[in-house]
Length: 422
Ligand code: JFZ
Image 1 (cartoon, rainbow, N blue to C red):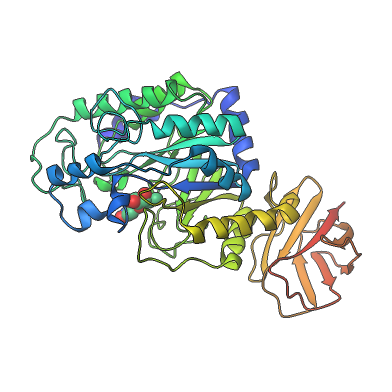
Image 2 (cartoon, rainbow, N blue to C red):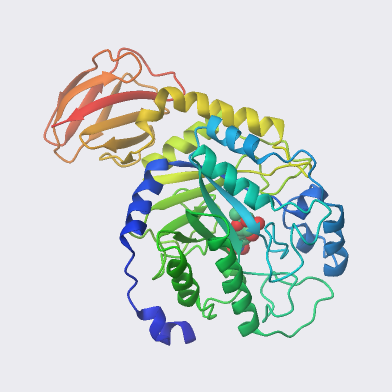
């Protein structure tokens, strides 16, 4: 109730010129790597273990004393990300367990002051990203299972043994101060990616506009993206879909996620866990991963594909190998993905289209036929050729679309036909 009535929430947000530029660049990048890493990684059973196993918050905090990722090498991570063909990284700066993976002055419960490792892993990653030309985004949890000022305790937010009272003003200030640190100590940040709003009832006043405006006052170009599973809110610069393509709702998370006008992103993970899970070897195949990337692009969205690094600071071998396979594919097909938008022909059973100006890339992912009809809303086609070998493709057109007559039933992972539109 409070949020709907607050005048700040109603006020129109006018993004700065550099913000609009970054939105377009964000859409051009198409592919990012999501990283869930924290002291939970040591338990090797996902990032929700504190909650799932009802761990006492003081005992959980002792994990930090043993966190020493001896093989952490930010330059190597960024090199692996580049080999994947990804253009940005989104890393957990602080997850629901409340542990800050960066050097914060707001609490000693952080990577530098609270572990024997004493290195600001986020600083090292930021430096490597800036050096190697990869954009950096920060995941930031707005729910906290540890802090006593996070109150009322949310739907999931109960660290066992925690006090049942709090102080939202204090918690709100804590978040603003941490965001100031994240946006002043690590150079240019591409986006802040919020999570956890779903922990409170729908009418809860998170004071989002104050938070969003605070971010834009420090870095006007920084995109605000929120994993709240709703239509975009005033002050946001992008819309993310968890484990679903925009407009789909296979997970049940996206029932209220009406697609807005902002740049779109869909996030998924390589296996079935976000944080490192030692028993979860159900990695998606190369084909599934590439299809997901292509389908995201065809749905006008980026793909943010997650890896959960091990406690020693390395990516699991299978993840490195899968990312590399995506990168190898992108080396050949990148032109039909990067810098494109969802194409004129909307997503179909057989695949999707991507588009750059007058060039339409037809991604045939699953077709048992040599002929394929594309509804083009009356738009005429000038020429058609196979993307890979540039051999012409025969076609006929009628008032509504074009019929492609392929030389063979497509059996590639992604058979791409390139059309020039009139
Ligand atoms: C959230 C996090 O809880 C999860 O750990 C991970 O970071 C993922 C990317 O984002 O996932 C959610 C989001 C919403 C719900 C559950 C998990 N929900 O609505 O119940």
